[in-house]
Length: 334
Ligand SMILES: [Zn+2]
Ligand SMILES: [Zn+2]
Ligand SMILES: [Zn+2]
Ligand SMILES: [Zn+2]
Image (cartoon, rainbow, N blue to C red):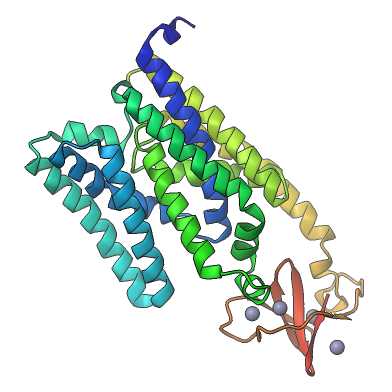
């Protein structure tokens, strides 16, 4: 490994290691909450943060983390308030982030090439202090993502149930958004702000093709993210391309390779799942209904957000991995 004689390669590999661990760790929760593009939005907003660093002569890593966290909080607040107008508000925030970043970079007298190293990552420009900050931020992200995994999982999987069992759903949602924001900064020098979301999401989607269970998915996504990051950075040290591009294309290649495995498993599960085993569904096996023992505070209805499945003479709601049907004053379960 003669490459390791170059300090910049060692710094780049360290950056890749931290990025590969942190991005999929947060991404697992984003995918579970169907917020796959949240990282992308924060990445856009962070462009302004980088530009502010260039303008003020501060390290863009510091200004980016501040702006990214602020952006994440604003995005979470917008998401919590409304749906239709919230969508437009998010778009405005993202465009403003990019345009503001390009404008301020120009004012700072920096070329587009400088900004490019943050948009798409650049292994040659990572400094020692970047590596240190990245390592500290990544350690925080990974520690929280793993340490709080029971709470974060519960909130992402079933907010209603989590609320009933006493968890502060809003605080945990905010925590995931802030973790995503910090991760964007961690990934900025390796993957770049415009591709960071891919490293949060693609390794998770790939793991979901082959493994089941939340923790297994979390850890295998982290292992995969680290592998593609290290290989991608090594590749771009030989061939002069942005590391972000090779990392993301490697991750996508892994997804394409595992996809057939996933669709085969899904087809097999569909044939044996108890979900479809009722006689009305034509599978000829009556599993019956059992009464749900715990109190059910949330009332399922047309717009409650859960998947509604017409089933015989009633409607079942898919919820927390099982299926409920209102029956008199209680809920029955399959
Ligand atoms: Zn519901
Ligand atoms: Zn039913
Ligand atoms: Zn329910
Ligand atoms: Zn009943």
